[in-house]
Length: 353
Image 1 (cartoon, helix red, strand yellow):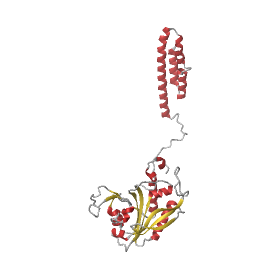
Image 2 (tube, helix red, strand yellow):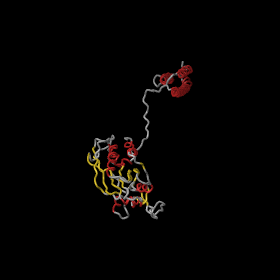
Image 3 (cartoon, one colour):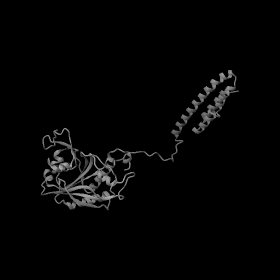
Image 4 (tube, helix red, strand yellow):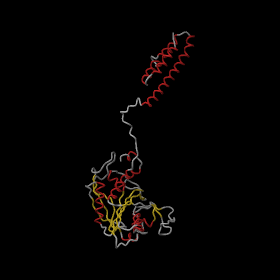
């Protein structure tokens, strides 16, 4: 005799008393398993019964199967909810998943290092506009119109280059994207009296073909120190202290004469670059040059014409100015082979720092 009602009560009672998912799965195999499940055996045995019994028991057995499957699924969901509420089934000894958090871009980190070093040397941080006038970007820096030195700066001129500007000294003066941060020096001197020492970090723009060492926009840090007795000896001390704190005690420097329209005399600073002494991020490629002198900064004593543009008397004051590129500093410090990597948005590169 096939007693489906008795099997139903037995199965539902067992499901109700199941304590966990493992026990529930064992009951599922016992009653509904494909090979040895009790209800499965009944369904298979229907073929040996008389036709009348087969017509009666067949629909009842299939209905019972659906009812039991529903009961098993409902009980499983109940066990999951109870497990989440009570914490049962959670292994608290397992390490948690590492949360991916954002961090400062490598250029922002390097700029912060530069700011902190100069602040410790009693320099103030000053900022200025990225859209500049022709006067502040060139004329006030001893680079008048048609001066050959203007070719040194590939300039992005504003298309509406005849717009009116209230700050302009000349009516309808041309506007441009600043090619260096030096214009901020003149702006600062117009509104402040020496002695002072400042740095001017910021983004600048050049109309150049991009390659491994050139970009159309990059970052500079300009510096200026003005007073009655400021000289190159003061400049050399500041530079020595800055590079020592940035790259380490054993950094080697050398000074070479050079030309910049807004300083006289002008000079450039080289550092001795050696691979292996500086940090190399994982996955970075080697630079072509393993060691040697590398230009890192332009500088010099402020030209008298620049003082005159700021309404200073160049006979009473003197000072030095310098400029460096943040990208170049970062490339040297962290052995980065291509300036374009800073702006690629490639997380594999950014996450190294």
